[in-house]
Image 1 (cartoon, rainbow, N blue to C red):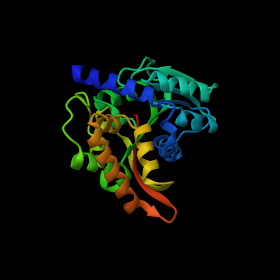
Image 2 (cartoon, helix red, strand yellow):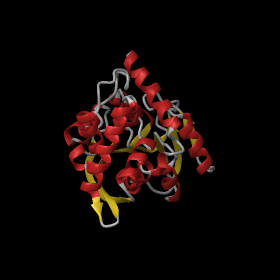
Image 3 (cartoon, helix red, strand yellow):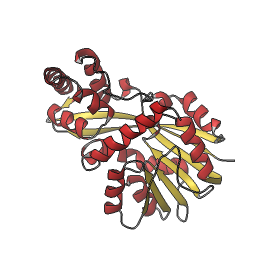
Image 4 (cartoon, rainbow, N blue to C red):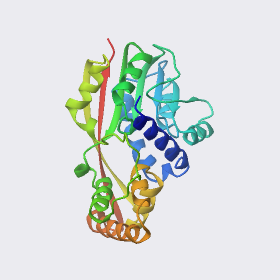
Length: 276
């Protein structure tokens, strides 16, 4: 494993650990909208043993339990594991790396990864791990944010940073992956097939809307529920941060205003495939 990959993993683990309590304010609320479609893509039902990779606060694991499945959640961030255990005392949660999971082979009927592939420096390694812990005939499903033009609420932050932000060496460690690479059908299929998960590949496009009170609220929640974007913003000097905030909130108010609130339009891709 490269030094850059290890450094990025530490950055993500520490960052999400710090954001564990505030994650639900926006990002977590949005990601929950993909939970049921993700479970459907993997065919999760009663009696199945299910692994929720990068479980965060345990949203996917909790939904799997409601279906009668036997879930286990795993996450690299200690803070997230603490929240998951507190909120879901009847579910097993394990501290571990998605690219090197402390789990036995062929333990699960389904492996679910809700918005994690875009955070992994070595996604091909993770896919091999998903295949290793999956039982013959089992199914893997993962969700990922679509391209920025389809998620303007998120793309707007990167756009504003690129326009107003200053160079900030060291804001992000080496090894950061392309956040939307696997929203592409060809890339998603190749990732799973490369791990031997090439049975009945499918990809579903999910769109939904989410209201927020104001541009200032969206800005605050963006900082509270992101790691990479927040780090890039907070690496700027105070004047640059002020200008980024002003431009972001002004554009958000203009683009997303719908009556008395802002309406975010989210776009997600959900890929799935089965083991032989």
